[in-house]
Image 1: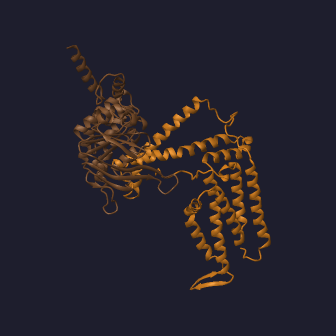
Image 2: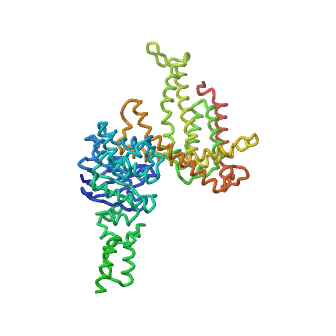
Image 3: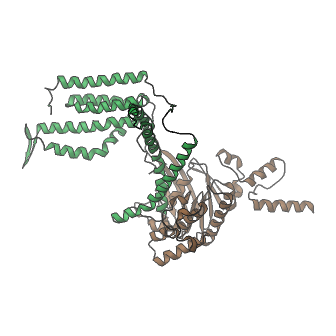
Length: 289
Length: 273
């Protein structure tokens, strides 16, 4: 269930004078079971890239194999869209804006229904998905999604994707526009989902703290090109070049950087609060001994 | 869908782009009227040269102008075919069973096709070289005399420009919603007509919801900036006639004179209809 990308290129409006190159020679692999972060400035090609993963954007040139399905040769072998979209679940930015059904249950059932499942199976999956995203099935199932709060709406939208039981979950800025509490809840939810439903998670985010905390590896895109593909510990050492691309580093990484500039000797691979707390309490203990 | 741009404004720096939008609108209307006076090939030659030089001046690729003809190509062909069998007297050029084609009908059909094509290409040049905003601005100014009879010219123009402004935004929104529902397995391309219509619901409802949300936000934003309609409102961008505008008028008058002269003098040489 991996994603293999080979020399992927994409240009918007090709052969016109408003043509815009969105992806340039992207090559990498996302492994099964990975939490994969994608960061980059607005317009760097992140969204275009992830839309390739379930064939919302057709491959123009290059090779793309998602969970064993070759998306690069749509002409020779017709892509099984149903299978592909059941395998790759896509949570877009502000997913609550795609809710449409009169009831929460109806909306969450939309995906499984499209897969052509049996009625019982659809209901079972919807029930499970609503429970997984932390909503009370009995009390929300007959409510209109439009009368829920913002955070709840987003959960319903995510449940709608989860109900398809995707093995690969792709999220485009899942925490955008939420308050810190809501952000934390959604991130915890994503971790839960990774444990229970989708083994592989791909997440786009502008929040480096989130990326640092969750990702196994991070891809950095700039101007449609892959700049770095590293684990967070190595990536955030390159704060200067990240800044040049208009990207931030995690808050803790910035603190560590300042400390080192002041002459303290703190290891560079500290970039999450948990790690920092552990390190500093250890050093303080050592000093006191 | 993102590749679709509404209207068809072709951004470039040219004399034609810089002309006063009011003038461009009036001249386009005058051009349309003139085309109806053209009734022979020589005059169409003049129209062709005129239009070609305008296209050249505007630095819009000819391909873009021709694109405007494509949607009405079927109408042109259909009318042409009807017209071809219409003429019932004159010189026979072709005869087969009960179908007879006359020389006059052949000429008329050719003229008709040319006329329809040139009719579309003129306004196409207008929309290609004028931003939708400039167009509505121009229309508002041209209609402003109607204010005397309490016709809400400003409000109408505002509604038009907001609508135009929101088309790309709503298109992008539609694109996003379609993609989101597609990734949830929605299928818009198969099934009978009822199934397809039902498949639109998951797109239309979110689209309406978001359109209303945006409308409300816009109304609030306008309110908080003390917008209160057209009365006493001044403009940031004043439209002024420049030297090029006068030259354009001059050029157009010469064009019309040529057409009139041809119509008066050469009627006997080339068939008239």
